[in-house]
Length: 373
Image (cartoon, rainbow, N blue to C red; front, top):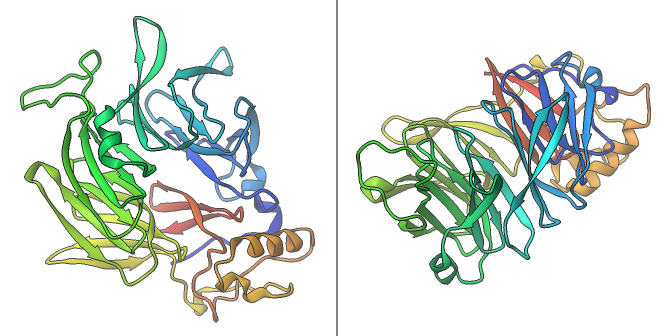
């Protein structure tokens, strides 16, 4: 796999990137640099972040932004924060305007995501999952919890991740007590249905427990759900047939899952690798996108700073410190010695997108990378 070389001027080195989301045609990007601000950039040169043009800085949150998603159809941005606020942003009259989301909660938000149509979203806060939508009567975005019985079943465990399926009728959620739950999120006022049995909003349709707290969940377009847990296990869930399969990974836990279809998905793990899983007779790793051979590494150099082996320890705080030190040396190139470490991602990958035949990944150390697929 080929990778585009980076230089300090090309990176968000001093801040890092904690959350990121691209617009539909990858001409703009919204991101946060581990702070309370949302930065909107125009991507004038995809391969050179140094040439990205800052268009707007959205300043309504006051604490760390934990969720950010730019919807490809509606062009609206959904954001949430540890400050217990959440907003829907719309671009009108040449500026971004925010709409507050009416949700009653005294706990911080951990994640948020749109549905496929952009008329509904889900957010995790404490031990509750909220389903949000625009109420035409009140002209407000409102959030409704998936019923009190959810709280009783999940106890005091935290809802870490949730996602609505492509039909907008079902929501999968994961908790720190290792529970995975699929619930009905049907809302009569906005959901259109054609045939089939529709369960009452909040009804639990399928539930099981994995071996560790749930890190990430997602759906394929055909309604197959995926979940990853801290014990390096991935679940593939066919809830309509009331069954699920498990993949026991030989690597570190999966932080993000991106299904291509029912039988293929990309995964990102704590070891900072991107892998393509595929199922024929059984689930196997088909390709490791982030592998790089030395002969393909022309122009890559060691990092000429103390304790360069920190990149193999996974200690993000120390890695960031070294990157920041090196970033101040204008004449130096920041490269990773891939002969000793074939994983060239220096910190946890926080963002992922597919743009044509390339994967775009960003990490907590501020690198923006492009991988051929």
